Figure 1 (tube, rainbow over the protein chains, first blue to last red):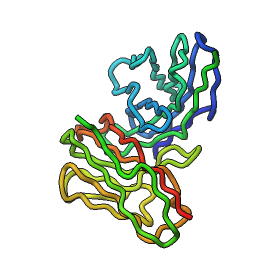
Figure 2: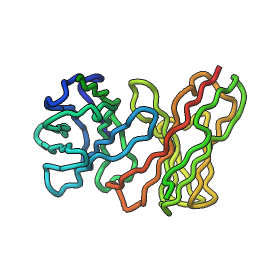
Figure 3: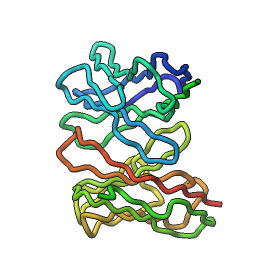
Figure 4: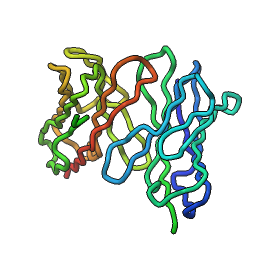
Amino acid sequence: AQSVTQLGSHVSVSEGALVLLRCNYSSSVPPYLFWYVQYPNQGLQLLLKYTSAATLVKGINGFEAEFKKSETSFHLTKPSAHMSDAAEYFCAVSDQGGGFKTIFGAGTRLFVKA
Amino acid sequence: NAGVTQTPKFRILKIGQSMTLQCAQDMNHNYMYWYRQDPGMGLKLIYYSVGAGITDKGEVPNGYNVSRSTTEDFPLRLELAAPSQTSVYFCASSYGTGDADTQYFGPGTRLTVL
């Protein structure tokens, strides 16, 4: 069965600092992996996704994530945090060839301090 | 395009009342989904549909019903509301190319059952 674990329900960084949001997955078959962002009082929107092409995936707003099969990880990074990055971030997984149901992690809320 | 729209934005129900959450998309997507989001729990799939006339249960379907008579609309029905159904409900849609589909989310309906 698929599962997603996001380490840390809350992460706080200073403006200009590195953002690192951690995600580990479990899947019995090669996965598709996603990061979604949710701004206050809005629905989720896609930041980036891994679909078995390049292991380093670049997304919108300067975010990127690296798929590491040996570590079963898909951590999200951004070199320099901006105040507008404050939001909740969800990692998600779906199985390649196993249907389209997507499993979401519990979310990590990112706070950015001035 | 309006994308995915949901009504109402907020609703308070008394225990035992019924209501329908409306969802519509104008992207001609085949797949539509209903999720509930509870604090610290991520998103849980309630029901999904792969096309007009075809629906199936997700992870947490009890207490809910859906129908899909058109490609555009996917209403969620709550019968006999219970406090455990207090949550934020998100509708989403995707084109339906497979497991790497990007899901597009509506802004959500915040439901409180008292």
